Amino acid sequence: MPTVSRGRDCECSCIACGQPVIAQKSDVYQWYFHHAVETNGADESILHRVGKRSLIAAAGADAPFAAPVSSSSHSNIDSIGAPHEQAWHVPAIGSPVANAQIEAALSSALRANAVIELTEDHGLIAVEIHVDACQRRNRPR
Image (tube, rainbow, N blue to C red; front, side, top):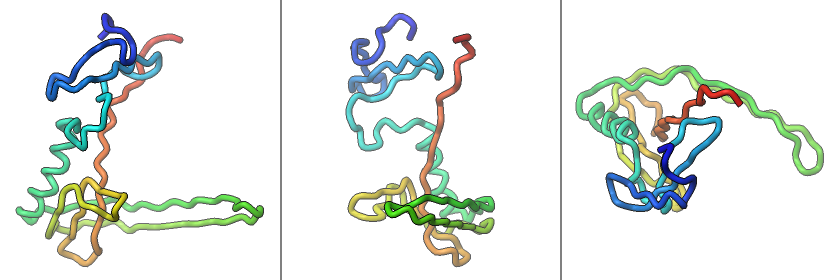
């Protein structure tokens, strides 16, 4: 990648699909390429695809899904200056996956990587798989 130009000037294409890619050459993060046009999931990384397929396999194998305790709070001030505080807490979950649907529509404008249903009654759980390949470069500034 050191020999290609930054951005669209690299005139590069994806080795998997042949579509144009943009060279992201940051001074802070690891360099990478990303598709220049929307690919509707065709540009997902192998790790991203494995994550989704693992949920489908878990549903067929009665394998457990585990999620840690998660809680947080958020505060803000609205347009008339009134403060608002919101807190939430989700207990730990450990239950076999009964069903999994990949690329599930949550609404007309919102889609989850997967929606799973557990054998214990936790309702439906929307899952978004995030693979972060960006690493800080060990270069002095």
